[in-house]
Image (cartoon, rainbow, N blue to C red; front, top):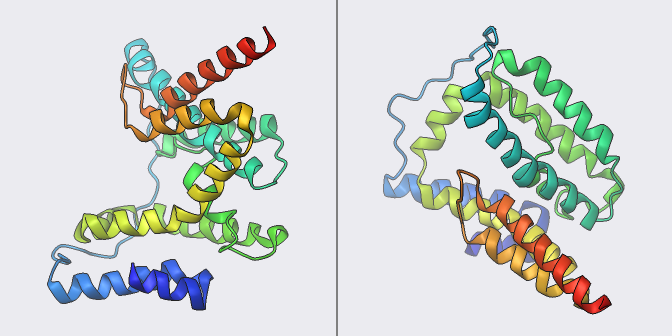
Length: 234
């Protein structure tokens, strides 16, 4: 945290990287990194023939669709729009859906408009010029491909690192995005109550009917917005 604060003053773009490096050094010095069993080896995609199952469609596919739409696509689009980017929403949804359909037999079934990645790549820390921040998204895509090829090694590496370090790093990386999004959400006084209800329900971690809090935050916030808007018009 101190490393992030110091670099936030001196070189904001590298503040999260500094926190990551210092965190690794501290964890290594304390012996909290377990490196036993970590090997760097690629894993190539393997084709698995699709098999339709009504039970799995109802129990897995539909909830996964709802979770993806509520926790990735919707927040990702909202984050980008809040940052001033005008997105062709329908073509993006269709394109990512078709990619997921084609690549699902190879295990790549989670293609979507990533919320956290979008939030990080559109932040000023990615690039001062909003028209050049696509470079961050391109680089992130390249690292995603590497992470896919070395998925087993990446998973083992993440398991070897302290959970507190991972949580702190993720929180610092999203701090600017969270503050900016809250400012945009609470700026309009007529929408403020619905926005804060959405935020609180989402942050609560509520799980209902197997669906996470991101979905229910949108539902409850949408209901509040509709009721309050109707009451004002009446």
